[in-house]
Image (cartoon, rainbow, N blue to C red):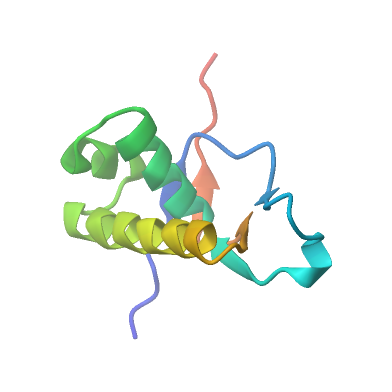
Length: 100
């Protein structure tokens, strides 16, 4: 299997875990969203970018971006529908440094 290409992210989340109020965290199952999935959701859903534009920013192909966003949507839906904590961690990402 080929190694994953590094994905570039601009935004690192301040909070790393989102959970329902109905249960304590230690009693909840969780889903894990990687940083690249988080960035894909931010670019496509929040910023309203087309997949090709977002893929260029993350320095990946459009088809890879499509797989990442589909995985992210599935995980978020699982967390919301099945009352699970959503944790953000991991992934093969580098944070884009702001130029001065």
